[in-house]
Length: 465
RNA sequence: GGCGCGGUAGCCAAGUGGUAAGGCCGAGGUCUGCAAAACCUCUAUGCGUCGGUUCAAUUCCGACCCGCGCCUCCA
Image (cartoon, rainbow, N blue to C red; front, side):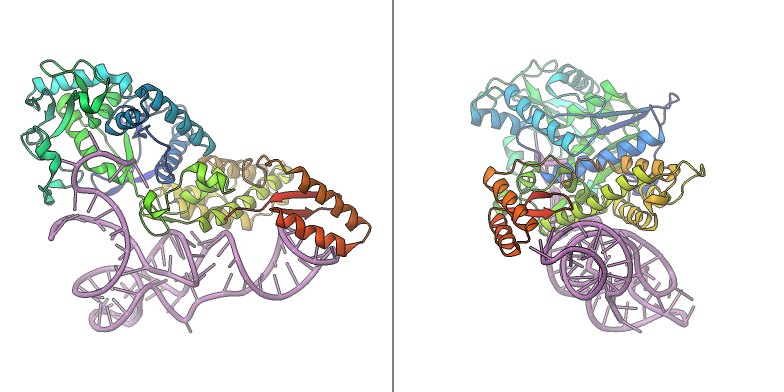
C-alpha cells in the first residue's frame, strides 16, 4: 500500500518512497527542547509522527531509519539551568528522562538515533566553517556568526516569506549585530551575564559561544542520515523560520536537495483556544494521568482529528477515547479467543483503515473505518486472517489495547473502602438490600464504585473532575 | 498589516456535485434485588449567513459574519 502524504513545499499530496538505491527510508522528525515537561500539544506531533514511523515500518520493513533530536542547549534550557542554579546537563537529563517515559507511555516507538545538540557541536561548527568559507555566513562585531539569507536565492520557498511583510519593529534586531533583519544566528557569542558556563570553541574567527538553534538539525541530519533525506517533519510552527533556515544552511553547505518531502502537523487547541498556563488549559501527560485518564486515551484523542487541521482537545474527548478503547479491547479479546483457523482466505474488512491512513494520514477517517469494521465483524466468526489484519491495524495506529484504563494496573484501594465492600457483599448475599444500598452509597462517597459480578465484585475509582 | 487554516448533530470529528462515516453523550429495550458492565435499537431533510452557477451544492464561485494559527529560536 502506498503511503501518500501532503508535502509542504509543493503543497501536493505525494507518495513516500526512499530515494537512495539502498532502499533505506531516511526520516527526520524535529524533537523537543528538554527544559520542562512536554505538553500534550507537543505529543500530538510526536504521536502523529509515530504513526508515520509505523506506516513506514510496514511499508519498508527493516529499511526505515528514523532520527529525532533533543535540543539540549538554547535560551530556554540555559535559562532553566540558571533559574534552578544547576548544571545545564543535569536539567536536560531530567527532562529527557521524563520525555522518554511519556513517549513510552504513549506507545511511541523510539527513534533509531536520538542525537543531542551538545553532542553534535563539532558537526555544527564544521558546517558553519563551510558556510563562512562559501560566503553564506559572516562574523558580526561581537563574534557571533550569521547566515546571510540574501546569499541563498531559494530562501522563502517553504514559507513563502517573500510574500510576507516582515515586521521590522523588532527589538531582537536592534540587540543583535546582523546585517539584515532576516539573517539568523548560526553561532551565538558567549555572554557571561546570560550563558553561565555554557560555551564551546567556535568556528574559525568566531568567538567562543554556542550554536544557534537551526544549525543543530542540519548538522545532525547530515551526520546520521546524509545530505538528502526522504522525509522531514515537525509542527507547523517550525515551518518558519526553523525549517526555512535548515534548508538554507544545508543546501548552501552541501549543494544538494536537503529534504525531498516536508510534512507539518497542525497545533492542538484546548477548549477552543491556544494552550497556555495563564488560561488554565495547559496539560501535560502527568496532569491527565492524575485526573484518572490513561495515556492511551490521550493517544487515541490525539489521533481523532486530521493531523493537518487544528484539533480541539477537551477532557470530554478523553472520555470518548476511553470508551472507544474499551470497545476495541473487548473486540481484541474476542478475536483472540474466537478466531478460527478454518479459512485461510485474505481478510478485507480492515482495508479501509489502511486506505485512510495511506491517503494523507487521515487518522479520524481511519478510526471511523476501524469501528465500521469492528461493528461488522462478529469476533466469534472471525478468521485468523481477520485477526492478523486487526492486529496490523492496531499496530499502525500504535494503540496498546492491554493498557487501557479497563485493564490498567489498579490503584490501591483504601482498606476502609475494601472493608465496606466486604460488608456490602455479605449484606447482598443475605438479601439485606437496604443495608447493601446504604453501603453502596458510602463507598461512592469515598470515591469508589462497586461493580457486582456473578461470583464477586470489583472496585473502581471514580474519576476526579 | 501580510500569509494560512477552519466553521458539519448536545460534544469530538470524517466526507462528497446527486442527497450526511465513526466515536462519545442521550433515549428505549434485553439482562439485573439496586447500580454498573455487556448486547440490541434509535438519535442532523441538515453541513456559519446571503447570493450565484447547475437538472442537482453541504460539496464549485462571490460577498459577508465568526473562530484559530504563523509573521525570527513555540510541536
